[in-house]
Image 1 (spheres, rainbow, N blue to C red):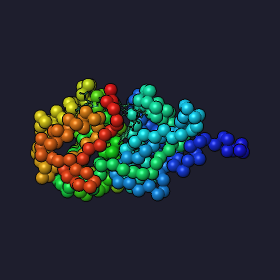
Image 2 (cartoon, rainbow, N blue to C red; image 1 turned 60 degrees about the vertical axis):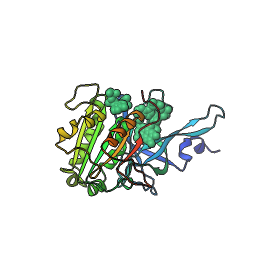
Image 3 (cartoon, protein in one colour; image 1 turned 120 degrees about the vertical axis):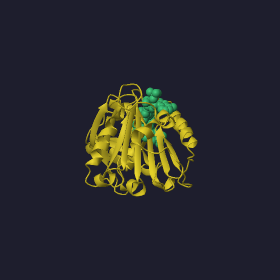
Image 4 (cartoon, helix red, strand yellow; image 1 turned 45 degrees about the horizontal axis):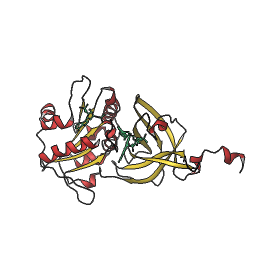
Length: 276
Ligand code: FAD
Ligand code: A2P
């Protein structure tokens, strides 16, 4: 082995290595980062990929990839890929991933999949994006995709977090969209943003499920209640949130769809586990 070979990090030898181009920390437990995009990678806004870092196998001592599912937060026209991530203190991946810096490399398996795609919904007039926590990520992609505004007259982004600062990534993204050269005009008047908190004072508060069931969000935004003829929804949050919000959507007459059978709403887990 040559000197150069021994000094080369293991991840560089992988065909799926991508370079980090920027990192931004939003709170103690949330950050976003951008990486180079593999030339061959095509994806539908809303899909997820497997990303990760190399780790040493405790038994064999060999290097192997440690991968986790991540929604692509950037739209499909972007030259780079963006991700929005939690920092789980003892999380095998994120306890290390949170320390990445510009110029570092991560592994990215270029096989996008997922249910939060336009193809899985029947045509409609309004689309509701319903997210808690990092469940915002697929909608950060879909909100920046012109197809969203071509397909729907109104796009309502409901995002709920415990605290005000956890809303910042989403809030800045929505504000940036309004001034965006490419889709600023398309977004105007169509995108309605409804952020809420549940554990800190904020002008709009409460769980998404409560604000839909009570009709508060319709009142606040001056919209007619949900109706299966006109409304479509995409859901991304914890298992408990997904389960509860599905019940609410069904109570309005919406039915779950899939890529193979488009209907009125689709759901994806933002993570596996209880997310305490
Ligand atoms: P893990 O061992 O994977 O998780 C440890 C525990 O942390 C979990 O049991 C859970 O209780 C909690 N946890 C994990 N992820 C989250 C989260 N995002 N929010 C709140 N609590 C969490 N994570 C992202 O940060 N951004 C994404 O865009 C994203 N997209 C995903 C898409 C899909 C389809 C799935 C299934 C998961 C997604 N995740 C996302 C979760 C991600 O795969 C990892 O679980 C996360 O990065 C933590 O990895 P870890 O190895 O540090 O901890
Ligand atoms: P709450 O503070 O009332 O639990 P978490 O950080 O636990 O994943 O929660 C993120 C956000 O999602 C919080 O605002 C939380 O509200 C809300 N949430 C958690 N579980 C549910 C649920 N089952 N239905 C609706 N909202 C939920």
